[in-house]
Length: 240
Ligand SMILES: Nc1ncnc2c1ncn2[C@@H]1O[C@H](COP(=O)(O)OP(=O)(O)OP(=O)(O)O)[C@@H](O)[C@H]1O
Ligand SMILES: [Mg+2]
Image (cartoon, rainbow, N blue to C red):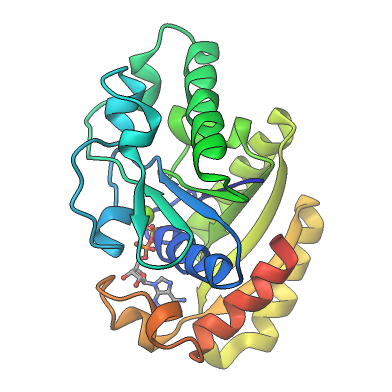
């Protein structure tokens, strides 16, 4: 199953969520591969502290094989494809969108057969850009992560209509919501997702214990009982 994670504005919590969800699924016995497609500002390698050689970019530019860009993480069945920062969008490596799509599919197929992956999680670039839409196009489920900031919410409308056009089922998730306003936020986000006709996964409150990690730790490993992890488990049950 291919699950992609998008946002309109940056910093809504995609990388943190993909990392923690990957750990959660792997701890539950699934074989998980995380692919960082955020070439304009990659973060997965920092979160998992991966010292990489080859990355997604090398594979997409035909400079190596798929297995060369897969890094096994710890004792879990968790496999990570990092990317290095690149000034160009992934799509510029290819002549046509179809070519880009088929190269991504080739990567997924190779990793799936070599590592027997159950779930692929894609961390995408924020904003409306070709690489995020490329991944949205191949995903089985696209999850848009938004804050309750109106700048984000307006862009989330656009992203969810794009998922609709691409024929990809979209989910909506609010993150970093004020924790003393959960009831009010519940009503607002429900109303919002009804208008959009998007599947609402729920909202994850701002959790100080996550903010204080500064992406140096993964709370699902270090503090699985924290509020963030409890909410994420509920979201994961709805998503997979
Ligand atoms: N629910 C939360 N509560 C508190 N802090 C959070 C929460 N979710 C994420 N964060 C923090 O917010 C910051 C941004 O998160 P993250 O890097 O995952 O966002 P992103 O959407 O991947 O950003 P970008 O769009 O730049 O790639 C990080 O410091 C992270 O630890
Ligand atoms: Mg990120």
